[in-house]
Image (cartoon, rainbow, N blue to C red; front, side, top):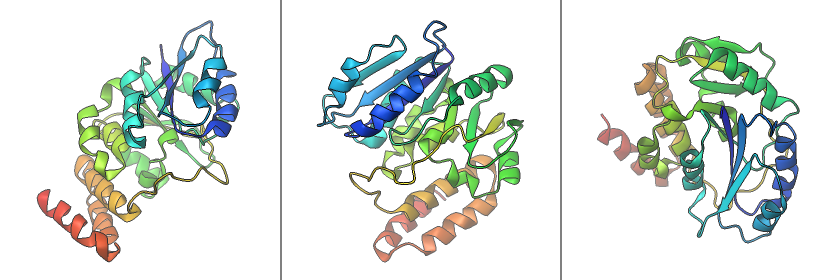
Length: 256
């Protein structure tokens, strides 16, 4: 199996009713190259009933006994995936027509460690390293592709241990994805995911976006030898709300 499209979800049945038919309609059940995996995080709406009503050999789903939290549900999807590649897909994102076929063609031809979606028109391209991707796409792309649906990665390279350690940062999936990407080939492709103009609301908003961005940028600086990202992380830290300044300062000191 080449690809696992994994959808963590919680109480977003209207979005699932649009998303799942769009994905399953692009999957060839006869070739068994793609599985669609849904991890229902103990939804209290009719998500389980809807999933039960679907009949497709490519679809696999379960309902967690309790709500384990969004980030842990991301990681459970990765742990349960069977494909060579994993595509975590947000339940409120949109699957463009033909996206699955385009992705499969790229994975077969280039065998990248990671394939990233960019929200502009570019030719599909394989880069020698993540640093070269940032040179061409711009440093801001390091944060732009933290959208879970924008990354398709080799399952064997995902660092689950590190991701679990970074759950408190709320970017656990990105630490797991990027941990082993240094020196590996990275693919870039235009818009294999689309976001809605009005997205689902967070059940609980992330504690502070500045915090997790600063910590993640510091990690990228160290992992890929990008000192400019260390400066960006410090700049983010300097602009934190006062109630978070102490927390981020102590984090930096522990990791010197």
